Figure 1 (cartoon, each protein chain N blue to C red):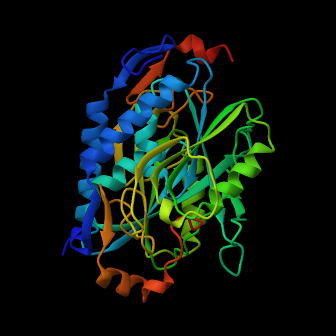
Figure 2: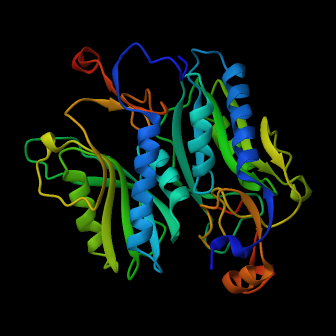
Figure 3: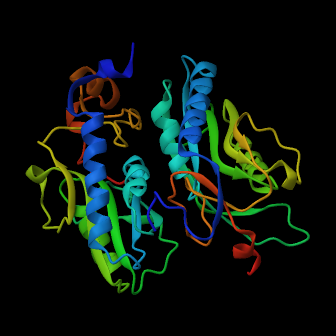
Length: 197
Length: 185
């Protein structure tokens, strides 16, 4: 039994992902001044796979840093207020900052992070997301670079998990209802995809 | 700078992009073989190991979870035993789990040994180490590395996640810096 059997539909296959990431890398490399050394900020855990490929395609010198967030006890705050488990190592004052996300869904977390980081006075603050699910958007967040717009499905693979599994699928897929049943118990147990972590 | 052109402060490419990829694939195959039928947790040590971890993870055929730790050294002194400060601990409860620590590079070995002791205390089912690069000439402590990519000479290396003052981390190959670059500091 392979992990691929738990996928009912491949939404974005591996070659399409890689081709699009190459384009995003080229676009980012062209948009920033070559000597500006933008800081790519990876939001853990989901974006690790995307960042590791994106960074190989960004041809201007750049830096990477990481942030990790966690919900406060009692579940996800509807305004996206999260606890920072890992803050940036880098002082971003006067720097060009690009937040790298795996998916933007209702947008609460990214909205909160943008507000938080803008108080530190970066030279610029942009968002690059691999996946965008506009159907679920509740917060009007500006997305500067979007890999793919996807329909309102629960998706796994390429960094995105279901119950911490399947992050290493080389494509973006939709889990079978049996898998959701097995891992989550019931479909209502799945909160938004930009849940912390 | 462009990835096709070698930066001026790079002395030579030690390990090509293709060799890194082949060896990471082989390491993933060995791990997949060793843990057949098991479920494992890969622990990536930030920041250096993020590219290695991502590539290793995509080549693994066994079921696995990933987690990250971020560490900071208290600074080297004559009396240090490699104690590290945990900036971000694991989210995962590891008791009874098969854990593999994924590191980009081991030189003195203090940090990895300290980390092993710390994680052993949490009683995982097993604890192994997977290291891309080792500098045996620098080793100060006896350390077993279960999965090792490459042994390299005692030079400052950059690329594939490794940096020099936050530079060159994202080169797709492993390169040695010119000695005058880091000896100026």
